[in-house]
Every structure is written in structure tokens, then in C-alpha cells.
Length: 127
Length: 127
DNA sequence: GTCGTACATAACTTATGGGTTATACAACCT
DNA sequence: AGGTTGTATAACCCATAAGTTATGTACGAC
Image (cartoon, each protein chain N blue to C red):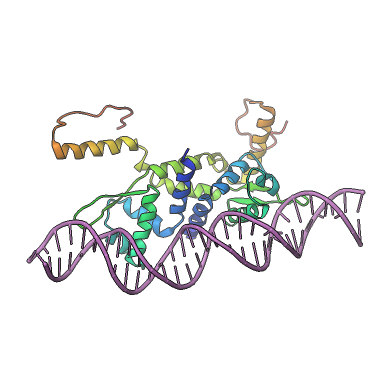
């Protein structure tokens, strides 16, 4: 229902490398805002903004520890995004690069018909 | 290497519901621009812009059939995005309610590097 | 060549995003 | 109370995104 909106904000949040790096950091455990900001050549308010984006997307939650607002990762939207992508898994799961090659080959065969019965044998041809 | 940039453009492309709907349509097979535009209350140039975004992100490719430019889905960036999300799979695959415990467990394991023979003992695992 | 169709591009508007600096707020310390 | 640390908010700048309408271009039909 609100799935679409969630995917919107989830993917939008994940589109920024700083925010992905923050998530990567948080995957190692909770961290405060300053800890999260430290690796970046960017002001603290900029990080706070990124954290707000992540929080609004439901990708992190925040606690309280004295003055600190420790952040921790919240995986539910990631699971949802992953689930969405799974709808397309069949498009790459049977070796995508080779499918492309196969298509090229077929076109070449159609065009020139000079590659008669050659079969592809590169690797891992499933099915 | 250019993985980060690819993820940027992939997630950014997926953040728009119109573009996700276009991909959903293309998962059923090739379609022309007009065919893709038809379901939306939006001008044709707007759709063309969305298609350009998808194309630049590598999510679609286009052929030629007379005046038509049939679009087809290209799954490689989707696979990459899915792979990225897989890094976080452990955060949702063992029941959200126990996420906290899981984190504690992981931290404890990292700190002590003690690989006990115990399998996912959800509570009271602190020794 | 001329016309119609399918699509792309241009030019423009408005909204949003990501960054800045300066300042305010909140919680602890003494 | 006053100072320090940690974080949030405000006000602003600039770039880009998403839409519009109008126009241009590529191709096939006649």
C-alpha cells in the first residue's frame, strides 16, 4: 500500500554514497553523529541532514545516551528494497553477460549466416 | 571501482515510481515509448526523460524498429544493487524483533573471536 | 517531395537536494 | 550558574530533477 512511497524514500536515501557509507559504518554497530561524521570531509550539519534522510526513510533509528544520539541501522526498508529487486532476479540469474553474447551471436547469424552450427561454450551455461 | 557511481545512478533511477513502473512493464517484454507512456498522466517528453535516466543508469537499452525505439530491460545494475543489499541481509533475515540481540551477539563475537558451536541462541548468550 | 507518426530536444518553471555558516538547544561537568 | 560538548535548526546558495509546451528530427507511406 504505502509500499511505493517507502521504496521511493528508500531508494532515494540509498542513492547517496555518503548515506550508503553511513549505513556501512552502522552495520558494524551503533555510532554517534560525530563518529559517523568523522570520516567525511563535510560539516556536521551536513551529516545531520543525511541522518535525517535516513531516519525518515526508516533506515536508521536513534537512541539517547546523554548528549549523544546513537544511531543504529534498521533493516526493514532494505528488506523491502531487496524484495522488490527479487522480482527482476530472473533477468540476471542465468548468466546475463552470456545472454547478451548469445543475442549478439544470434543477430550475427541472422545477418551473415556464416556462423553455422557453432555452439557457445564459455562457461556456466545453466539449464 | 566505478561501482559507487553505478549504485548512485541505479538507486536514483529506482527512486522514482514512474521509472519503477516502466521497468515493471518492460519485465513483460519490449515496449515502445508510446506504449510505455500510455498508462501515465504525463506528457510524452516526460516519459522520454525518464527513459533517458534509465538508459544512463544502464537499466534499459534501446533498439530501432522503423520510427520506434523499443526499450528492453537491462538487469546488470539491478543485480549490482541486489548484491549491495545482500551485504545487509543478515540484519533482517533473523527476525526483526531480535535484531538488537543479534547485534550484541555479533559485537561479542567480533570482540572475542570466539566461535562457539552454539547456533543462533537468541537470548542469554552473553558469557 | 509531402505528410503523418514516433520520438527527441530545447527552453523554461518550480521544487528539491546537498552543501555551507551561524546559531540554538540539550545534557553533562564543575 | 557558567562552560563545554554533542547535535539540531535556520537561512542561505547553487545545482539538478521533474514537469511543462513548443519545436525539431528520423522514418515510412503515399
